[in-house]
Length: 496
Image (tube, rainbow, N blue to C red):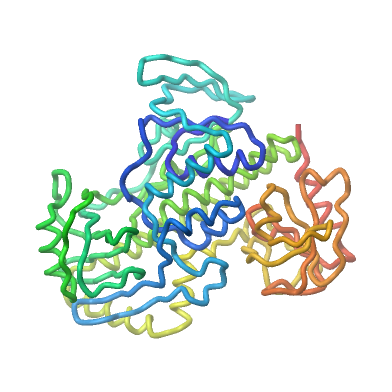
């Protein structure tokens, strides 16, 4: 498999494929990984998936465990969100620069024998029924022709793979500019909390970064041009918009950008798949972009690995586009709504907006739903072909819902966690409060078994079929387990 692009999405794709025994090759046109902070947050759902990959501890050690977010106007606090009590083993947003995320992913890959081929460009490709012919060029002018069974476009907003497909990247470009700057700040600002200020002349957001730095993001309206704001310009903006005294110094990095809201219609084109910014870009409001792309990679990798191992048919791959395109639509809608909400300029509408935010922020149910949305633990695939509503299904968790990590005992009695049990890329037949099942020999390459006592939303007395990415595919009573095994067996149709 050839992965084009070695940002967080491409590196995640390579990591997840390699872990499941799929041969990978990953290229990138740049000479070095990114040295700038760029995306700053790993949300709890992404951390859970990294836990399944067996490497989450490296990330947690390198970042800041965020406690929450505070939303203010120029006249005082509007709402405060806390992640404490979130139903996840990682009840916090991890504040970590993208440069660190890429460094750790790259190190894990190198530990597993996979190196990024840098200064290597995809010059062209032709897809056919059995694979993809590619032409690669290196910085010294060398040209290579090669074949790959699959081509995975993880090469960002200006994707060469997408352009080669001729796929429309439909959407709009907003007519307002934003600036960002990484600076050291002195003042009364929590070092583990995100702060957003809805000032009359534009929003400004402040995000802690390791090393005592903060990311400042602000809408500035008119095009700024140039390379980004100066330190003096950042200070003036903070003085004008932030209701606490802050002193900016040591400007580390600065840039300006204009928001695009664009997405392709489908993520699969025969032997070619798209993921991350190559498939969807949107406002940074909510900080969902990199996480959405990394979760694209997790979703596709286990499917591809199963097909490549010959244990599942090609039809398993179609669910990737169905599931992740729907998530992309949701992220674009939510990010666009937040951007337009923060961008209100009419003073009367600003007062109304602030009143609504203050009222909603005072309601525990609203705060909980917003935290679950931001953390992405509420992502579900209930309309997926893999989500089967069988007779006798368990109450509580619906097919397509995420299953929280829990303690299990493997079929040989070894204690483990759900995430660890899913790490080999197979489905898990989990018996809760009843005897573990024996997986038929012809399905053991596809699934294995474990048992657990009643925990969380999993009801005792039922058997659960859990996908390799910890979403529920199906549940049933032990006396109807043949229905579950038949659903598993159907995935092998067309396996090579």
